[in-house]
Length: 336
Ligand SMILES: Cc1ncc(COP(=O)(O)O)c(C=O)c1O
Image (cartoon, rainbow, N blue to C red; front, side, top):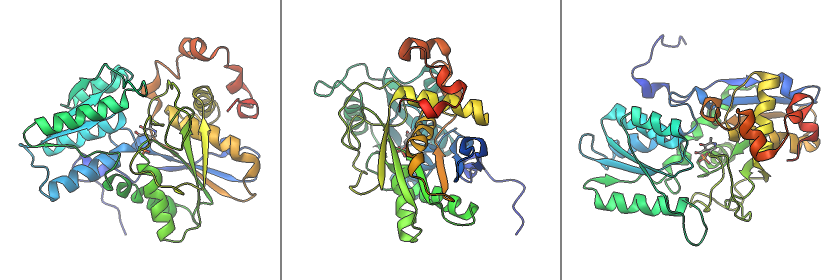
């Protein structure tokens, strides 16, 4: 079948992201490594799939009416950008509630796409985190705004449903289903969508959830985190016991090392959670069977982290002199 030479409208470019073998990262190891580059979505991240699914379904079901409804959502960046783009496309007003940790470039992109951005400045008294305050503010705004609608990525089944396509694309691209799939987590939408697809199809893939040290999703003790994207201060409603076959918690320094190693070995400029996924692969490496195919989902691109992960001074200030860890055979010695 011939593929069409063009598609109609920007939303038609969501999904069908490249799957790339990373032979250098695999090195002399007896298994193969593939990366699903979600940065190739039009808004630059894995969350474009969720944004499109939630808004398109909202419109189809009559819950969202272009020109009248106001979509209100909490996001630290990527979902906000995805929603800003999809809402702009469909002519829906969008208000995104963020916090001071959201980087200025993400806010500027959302605004450039026509979104209104509200920054909460208070943390939750019980946890010291912004997320509970952001979520409460979204509920308040959605209730107070005529025709307000909150998709609620943390509980909306359309979020994981969007990622069934991710797993379908991976399985279709490879000669056989992957043996292992490494997936960063926050709302659990990506992980749950991929897991549910794989279990329904009886693929036999083992899922490794990659969470941040200090994130509450898999019951870790809450602690401060510097890298946005993966991890959550509250366990999301989409979480299910037994969702992952294995969980690996990665600290911020190891995520940075993973990102820098990706550049050094594969010339891939990826975001912080992708670095965490690389660190998790390295931690799991001694137990990966010979001949296995491992798929890493890389949720976003590195350009959004130029002031942090890819800024040598920032890295030195927060983690000390760790540059030697990605200069040679980085992950042999990484402290993940
Ligand atoms: C960079 C990045 N990595 C990982 C995730 C986790 O994805 P999910 O919400 O599907 O668990 C997100 C979610 O926003 C993200 O922005």
